[in-house]
Length: 376
Image (cartoon, rainbow, N blue to C red; front, side, top):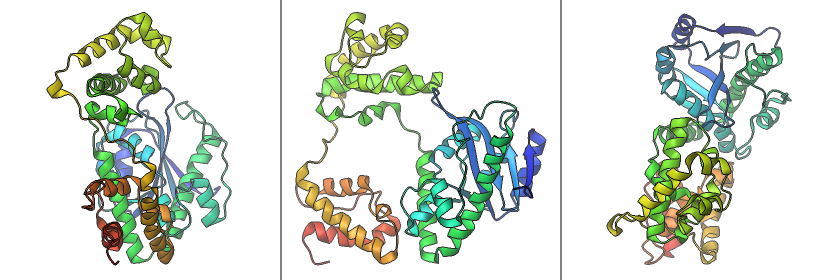
């Protein structure tokens, strides 16, 4: 670490110059440090990049013009290497409305190589590079200034080792698995670009399927308001209205503040600050005409399908063993359930629309044959 070249970027000109240099680099490791306690959006505290020799530490707080960075993030010239990057994507999208493409996720690469599924960064570095990483700064305040020497060292070392990790994993990937990995990474970026409709947030509430359509109309109003207001105020959803309160609110629909305060897990602050609004939302939901009631979500599949699910998972497991890959990466739960629902009542099974790419080519027909009782 003593010989590492660390360069700080603390103004717009420095960022423009760095981005011009990064445009010429074939691969760069990228990481972010951020804070997210009671806010809806993550607040960036530091962005780190490395080419294996130099580490750039980008301080986002004084930056006012992010366009050069956004252009580099989406430039096809440079492969961006991240680890388990879902939260990093949120940080970057919030900062500059851009996402890192093309992307190489080292956590996914580990799964394609059979090293493990959803492996944490420190564990993967130890497994592949034989290094023990310090853990002391993972929970520190990345918005404080100045950053401590320990924070700077932690951030720089993490990104330097991320580049080394990429080199080691890349060397083990054959062309086929590398293509599959990049396809999955591109799919992850495409999913991150989608903006979820607040009017559909009610579908994520546990046990929503147990509510009557009129109650679902109330739940839809509450969830849409919660999602929209959390974004507008930049506060965590549960700080605005706790998740465990949503279902009983929709079911019992209290019509006064006293009854509202008795709802399960209802925080007094919510009643005080937004109680009248919640009463109005429930009244509006109750007034929704029957023609506009939401459809009842599908209930969970019962235990009777467990044997079928096991047979399908075994197909993925066998393929994973043949290819020395983590079994979990083969068949995703959501895709399996969509496949089962496609023909659960009439037996006419079809591969769901999102079951495409290499998985469909590898064992899509085998899954359908298993469900339809045909020879594989």
